[in-house]
Image (cartoon, rainbow, N blue to C red):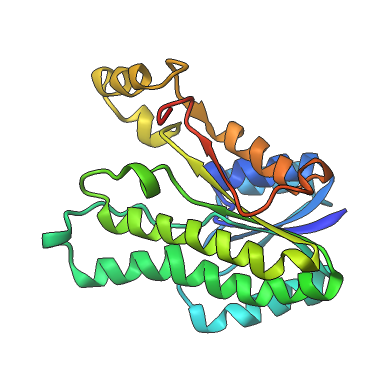
Length: 240
């Protein structure tokens, strides 16, 4: 069983990834500030394959301690899923600078620094898989999400360059870009808003968090051994 870290693994996409990877024989370490009831229930169902480590990823200066602690407790790290992130909305002209800084810190700086320390373990082992969760906002843009879009675009550039840095060492680096998904966010939309998004997609429906989890699981499998430096979009054809 390979050890995989999933940040933001307590709910939503992260929790779906945690459960899917555990079902596919990985030992998964979910990182989040607090454990949710759903994550606790998942750990109870899979006590030998799902673990929780509390950590606030905004504590960038302590990320090296997090990586070292996981490695010492569980052994070599094979996979890293950089999923945690903020989705704060705000028009740039009026957005508080503190909010801008928090978005960049959690969505860009934290995953890059965490990857720096985790990839060292992968380099020692001569194998590893890194998956960065981006967004279609990185390429399509969306009013009120300029800073968020910038952080998600930065992860794509990071993915492509890091893939070239570590490819010769047996490590793959890819990004996944979800679109609007069947989540609490879209559930809170009115019927007209939801139908509009569905009509824009080629498949006339929304993708789900499980679709994202299955793609991440594929990227960690042997079948994806020759896929690196790419971005897989999961949006039911919304950007087709």
